[in-house]
Amino acid sequence: MGRAPCCDKANVKKGPWSPEEDAKLKAYIEQHGTGGNWIALPQKIGLKRCGKSCRLRWLNYLRPNIKHGAFSEEEESIICGLYVTIGSRWSIIAAQLPGRTDNDIKNYWNTRLKKKLFGRQPKERSAGRIANGLKGEATKRNQKESSMVNGAGNGTISGTINNNQYWPQLPDFAPPSSLHEIPHIPHHGSPSDLLTCVGGQFSEDHLRSVFSTFGNFQNPIHIPPPPPSLSLRGDMLTDPSSTILGSFQPVNSIYCDNSQSSNTHFISTNQEVVPNEWNELQYFVNDLGKDEAAYSNQQSSDVLLEAFCGNCSSQASSTPESSYSWTDMSSLADPSTVSMYEACRPVIQQDCSEPFRELMYFVPQ
DNA sequence: AAAGGGTGCAACCGCACAATC
DNA sequence: CGATTGTGCGGTTGCACCCTT
Image 1 (spheres, chains in turn blue, yellow, purple):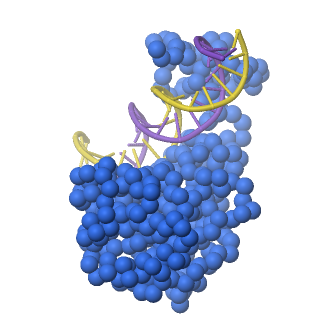
Image 2 (cartoon, chains in turn brown, cyan, green):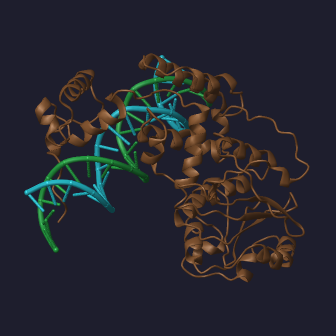
Image 3 (cartoon, helix red, strand yellow):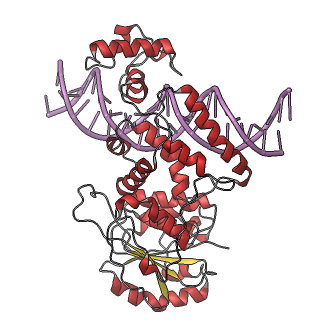
């Protein structure tokens, strides 16, 4: 037996709220409060709405000091930083952004920030629409919402956008003499953001652009020297002073072969990787629409394989519940890269404390 | 001018947990 | 202490708007 419905579904109105309904709800709550009972509230007001719907409408739109309109760069940084730290805990993230609702932030993440962080551009055909479309959206909002916040964020987006990119151009960076000079890495990061760096474009510019996105989370980092023949893409250390790192599980380092032409990349970590983050990785890899494969020597390899085999077209997908040996999986990759990695594994293993975990994935070219 | 498709946002759904009976 | 009810939350959906063809 399921639980009783919170309201008579047949007799409640659904869909967009009318100005009259808004006015009724707002006036009542401002005068009497919610009374601690959302379910009973619509009857008191004479609204044919579900109590939950009233609550949502109030919290997301009608209550005072709600901030609508474009997100500032600072807000973006906070959202991104918290997302890679705590995941989709929108209510917690919203608590850090006065005036923003969890729904707003969730929508903003899903429609924009995710694309931005994953480094994906919209389909080619959309390029023109994007430049104009954003302007259109902003105009729509401006017309719709007289309480629009100052135009800083909006102006930033529409003002700096170029013809080819969805997002403002990221600042130019002077090429580093070595990756050790990457100044700041998101210390709240998860595997996903670093893997995004590695998997998204495989470019150092992109890597730095993602790091710059988290400028608010700058902190000194320690980057150990890479093993021979490998370049170190990133390294993260937890911040012991932080109080919100409960679920944070960093990837210690990501090693990429030095050959730009190679399609194989190795990731090592001595940390437990939580399933959510692998799911996110799965999303990312699947979103790329490319074949991939994974190998793990860790105990929780089932987590990894589950995460990776959802849409695999490689041989891995045919037996998603079985385990794969290194031999099996490495056979899928470029032989020279595999042999190079094999030679480096002891060094990497030494670099990571036990239990050593590794993941290989490749993107056919 | 119209159809088709992409995008963003408001709103809904269902589950988990807390509070109350 | 179990059952019931209310609330909070994240995921998902529906739709209006706009652009491209």
